[in-house]
Image (cartoon, rainbow, N blue to C red; front, side, top):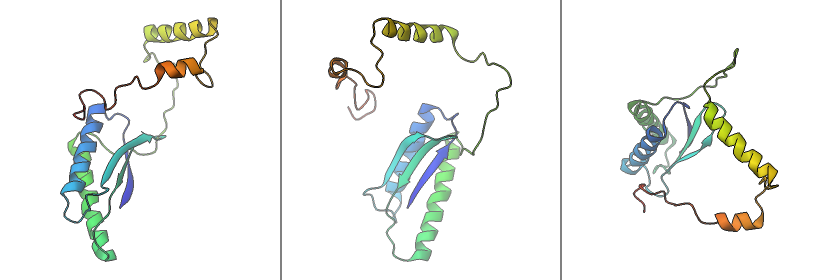
Length: 151
């Protein structure tokens, strides 16, 4: 069974984390799902949604039984998404008729000043960072992230 769930962009990072954990638990608990490689991953940002891929082997060779198990899993997935306060996305477009004041002007100025400084020092990292910068950045991010329970 493989499907990509598309959750609304309004889903907060912690709601998304809870959805991921609950879906993983669902796959691990289900008696007709093989625990390896039962997988749930936030795979990216779609045009209208946050994409969450689920993948698992269902332990049956009978098509009708498979469809029944898949239906059971899909109904449980829907329940999990709803009980976390999130929801499924639908294709949408936003039309801006007037200029929005939603962006933080101070943060915009800080970002523009940083890029202007790079430009003035001839250090714009496009299309790639230079070798010295790449070496300085290499392996400096904490992974797994502190507080994730995997550290």
